[in-house]
Length: 575
Image (cartoon, rainbow, N blue to C red):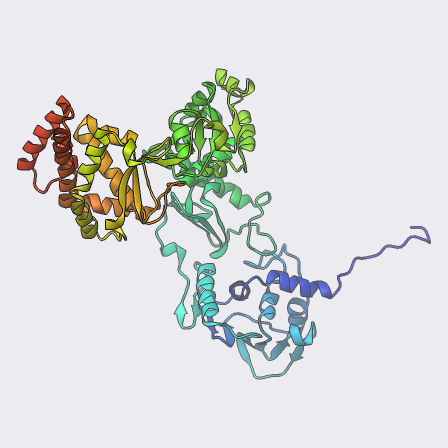
């Protein structure tokens, strides 16, 4: 080097240590987990941890620090050569500081103590020597801020999850919280890991028995647990909360196995794919890890009615020139547009599955996916299939209005079926009460007629129920048509709020409907039959024509009444 050129060495400001401690200390559970891993590295065969709202005590029977030189080298200095293979966990030499963020603590080992309080004393710590002998390592501390009962409970749950398969017994407040993975039952086992797979849920990965992270099930198509065996270490980031997938040779062996087992399960199963399995397949085919030909028969597109479609079926719809849009399930207008094939309407779940925000992005991904799939590509290259986010633009000829008709516009047939529905209404109320369904204002709801492009019936949830005249026209088809009308009426009574715009239902709604039909078969079934019988009476009184099919169903109904007990309208149809 010349006289005006100097060789210099980078140094680290003490302030970076404060930042490092604060950024690494995500939770008390993670901080205590670092102590557990350090104890295992120190050769401990057991750990005992006591945590209260105000303080903690951690003891292990490992080597501790044997000399002052060890303290200066491994306690005082942050960082060490991470290539030291003698350690089970330690790779960076910074984990012990996480605990310092939560409490001042005193470390007792051999004849030494180290007193640390970074919030009050900064990076200076007090080292005492020639104290009474302390075997192993004892850490004591009082929290800067006492834990609330909910925080203490959350800590216990978190640490139990984090150290579930730790390699030595870990006792927390008198209870052993970890398990020996070798004694557990697993679906698969390799030289690298114990593996338990399931179709849904997250995939939890443990490195040498200590939790690293949860992966969404779609990453490998399965949920479950993976625990690497003793001596098999994953390559982790500095925070130990993720796998460095580009460098980790172990994960590169485990992940393909997980994916292969997931694929085998999908091939053998006749059940519908789970959302995680669908998202896994989509992710892989879009990243070219899976050929399109292998998944063309998989049902990966979900329409607004909840039906799943293969990509081939979707391609066919697009080739016909149908548009494609998106709407929430239960949007009546969009549902009708899909039924009439004005557009192929998908749910937002499909967008999530393809990892896109809108229909334009979906079209781009599908165009790339379908490249080379014979003439179906024309659906995109010729722009036959228009993709849009506003479903209203695909059903401009449909009105989303639900219009109630005045009594004077009701036809004699409609008056007859309305009268038939009203007369035995007490039986329907009885069915609702017997099933336990809570339906307020039952007797106060007026039953009338309306017209709508999108709804068979609707209600304000309190005062009125309106049935579409197109639905009421089904009464002329005989008893099955009357059953359909009765089911719609029951459906509307179970709504305790307005359903005029959206018509989505949760699981509880369907359970209520099921309970009325199944648990109150006698009263509900009797109501349906009484409505049919009364409808024929009303037609006769009004001198309206009774069709032959209606007479036939009346005869079958009479026969079934004598043969079936209790009455079930579904059985009547079968009869």
